[in-house]
Amino acid sequence: MLICLNLRFRQANIINTKCETMIKHVATVLMLSSLFMINALYADEAPELKQDPHINALGFFDIHICNWPQRPNYFKVLFNTEKYQYIDSMSVYTPEDKLLVTLDKTKFKTLKRKYRPDKRIYILDIDVPEFATTGWYKIDVKTKNGKSFQAKDYVIMSRLERVSKMTPSGEDIEVRLPVTLQWKTVPGAYYYRVFVRDAWTDELVYSSNTIEKNAIRIPKNRLETGGYYYWSVNSRDLNGHILLGDFHMGSMSEKAFFNVAD
Image (cartoon, rainbow, N blue to C red; front, side, top):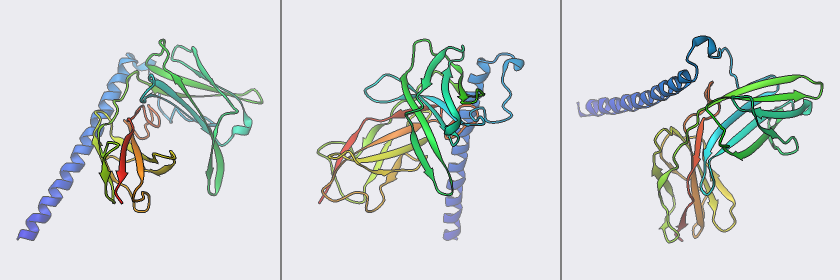
């Protein structure tokens, strides 16, 4: 009887956790839908989302607002493509069709993929200008043979708070392996990524996948006894959305330092 009661209790907890997660996601969708409808008061003014507007024949476009330490809020503008050899120019426009920025073809990161063509990722960070407004931001990608391809991303002018109350945190803090990192959840953030670096060399020793919890245990063999490290947390509100792209708002925490005991 006791075993049955324990099993039922655990199942109830699992169901409650799943319900809480579902409620959070539903609330987010409702909020984003409301914000979108405010900017499209009439149905015939709203674009039809029959396919992902971030994708065109050449690649994927994303723009979002970042809240990072020691700098003003900024736009991260991104376009990635396998067909970079055909591209002549990439220009990004505001909802009012005002030129925001032109991506530099000579500055990119290469993403190598096994059994698939390499991708080039063109990324640019620019301070959010005073004239920036909520709405559809557009990229116009022109090819060398004169063709033009557009993609869009919807940006809402709001920002995400940064993670706080990080543990462990302090230059004199000493912890033992294995190390668990914890932080206070950010309102509106449902996903996090954790980065750990060697404080002396600045070498990245660990980066997590996208997680939903506000704690993570660092895997074995990533940290060394006697080592000195710092860590930071990237928060994001979404993880892939047909309207708002890869994610809409992102923030990066301050650095938190710790020592690993010998």
